[in-house]
Image (cartoon, rainbow, N blue to C red; front, side):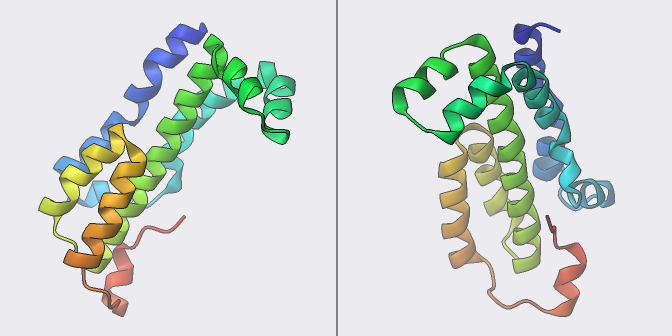
Length: 153
């Protein structure tokens, strides 16, 4: 499979999970599916397919971080597509955590849904927004009944 193809499909592999968390948060299937960290497996598998052929270069870049070396690696099609798959997979895990934490803490979904959209596009800003929102809108106490819907890694 070509790098361009893998790059092109990566985001679409996670769209159903984001859509479920945003548009069907209380649906029993959403809760069941999102409860599993395996929802990030497909983009992370794309990452593996892209990075395994270049694992030596990747290891060199990551084990001795240097801005120019990293820039050069990410400037390749494989490096950029691999970073994209990495981001898409890990952003989904962040969104999954926020979804479960919000349900557990009682953060209203009308507060959470736009934050999830921001997280899809700009994950660090979404995470910061969620942490702020949960401190304002969510209850800090956790009761045993809350843990039934908690999302654990």
